[in-house]
Length: 449
Image 1 (tube, rainbow, N blue to C red):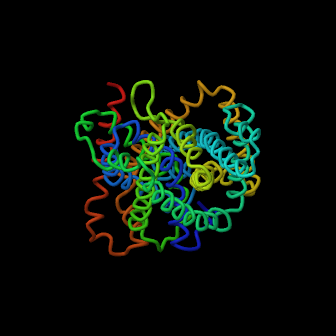
Image 2: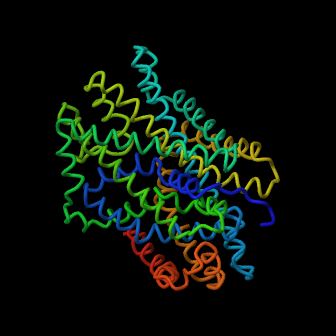
Image 3: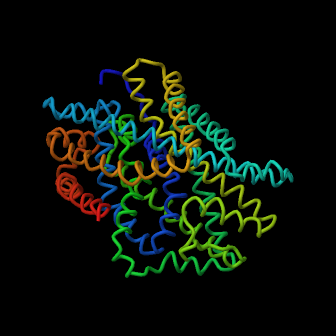
């Protein structure tokens, strides 16, 4: 805690970086996939409700922990209490969060490598390089290793530049581009034949679907995954936040931005599925359900782009460029989690710490690629369905039960002196102490039924 911490230069820089962390594959790849798997509009309603009832309060927890501790997630959780047992448990939870962050980034690099490959393939089609394009579309070990390495290298480069010149600068550049492309593509897709049928599925809920507990389980995991909760990313970003900033207000901006991007992504992809159906593509799996998972992005939508002709090539380039931006903005925040620890504990320069950590994570990616059928689904479920939820509950417990209320209030007052008299302060501390852990536990318990 004695080390001088870097800081975001501006409020807008932090919001763009935090929103970039939140807006990633969880929104543009994961959210539409979950919508397709879980009955359309009913899932959208549950996701939006849980984002603001559970994910937003936890986001404030992480940001407040980070700004107070001014350290890595490991040191932060070990510093809340004078009780040695609580400190040791906190230290252990911090280490668990680091492991989860590394595993999450390892599969991020793989999926993002696919996106880079499809982006290059879309560009190659413009020049008629069919052999190269076909190789880029093939699911092969060589392709996956090469493009995962490319993505990892770009992520390492950005993070190695630091908070201001790397994370903040790139986020402020990329996020507006992402938003413009997403709005354009969503608007264009809705003009395609068949798209309005998809729009109905996306916006008109079948309330009987709410009787299925899996919708709540998946929506909870999706809301936490899309906001980058449970891995310490927002704790680390919070540690770079100025003491003058109003955490609840900034957190609300990030949550709204994140949910809006997810909603727009669904508005793009679900209607696009039905447009593909109109043109003759098969959008249903063997069980008669909407195609989801990786097939949604990498098999069904390219068929639509091919059918569209020249305009499809342009849309394809923009689409996979959009996904690549989203992946990068999230990946840099996840990599920052272990990098901040290595800098803190090993006294390495940022470039050396970033290359060391990024190289270690890519090694995990390479092992996963070579044992894909076993390790990839395990890593995906272990991180996004189980671990981030468990860790988020523990974060709430530490803030609600272990951190002294006076210290918590003092930290929030540094950015908002009048917060003690606000409705937020009257509700939030007890909400994260009692309500969040209980609600998360109730939803999570459905895994074991």
